[in-house]
Length: 414
Image (cartoon, rainbow, N blue to C red; front, side, top):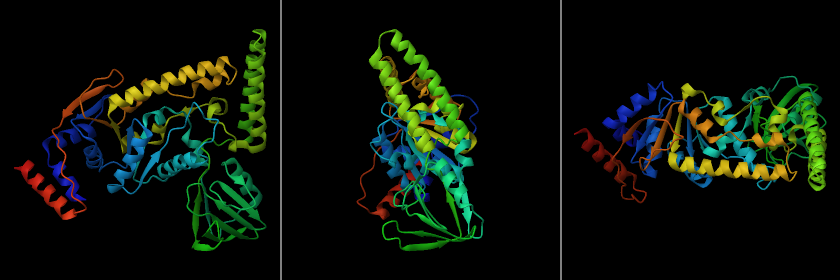
């Protein structure tokens, strides 16, 4: 990997940027201009060698996924963090795949591993529950531990797991006598925990389809299958808030002779409350976060500012996309509110772009852009123009690549 880093590390501009970045104490962002796409990830890797985590932010999901795949060259521990569709949060088009991708990232951050997270700016705008709730629900089991089967089943339900006759899909668990099967949302294979009385006698992974054992394990960690984790007291308190607001809004709609809208809203809330009472935390609550948690955060709160490098890809494009998302969101929420599809408390499910830009500016942040274009949302502390060029393809010839890098290093060092 030194063949990729040493040529850049020898550049005078790189040394200046690195010194400014790691000595940064202000609220501004350092910007590098003249960067083309293949070079951005290269620079990010070189600049972040001393940090524990990297957060790469771009403007579209497709671009973020491409960056994620390309960055595997530098860091195998890279994950994509998708944004939740706040306009269509009630539809389950992608099943639990989106939730799985998000939980995988939260798992990496909870474990404190050196990692890279690639996401979009609108994902930072999504409101999320306080990370302390997620961290407090992680379960560690070891052979020889004691375990109350009934208590464990209740805990798994609170964590968002669904009981089934067989744990055949991520996010499910099954119980047969003294055997507990759990298909952890972030794992490729389910676990089977066998008890001898109330003591864990064995733990092993197995194939979900053929039930064949794969590996005996001494210790496992079970991560939540949901970001919002609620106990019964929180659920009941949330239901009371929903009912109070629903009654107030429905009464106002009926006074305005909007009977269809009033009926629609009451039916929606009644259905949600039924799901809550039956499913608990597993109910679809993405659009009702404010009713069940007092404090909401964004993904940035899961990162330690002094141990994280944030990289913004093309900040002008990010600003344009975030403005479009925000405008569409405000317009959609207003129309839904008037037609009785949502409650007033649901209209604040999104952080404003200006607020996120301010948060990013207080972290160790570098912006990478092809052209220097100023935007009001971004407070730039200093701009570093770079002269870069593309290189010819090497057709899988690593020797030619190393040779060219060595020549480049010799040229810039004189």
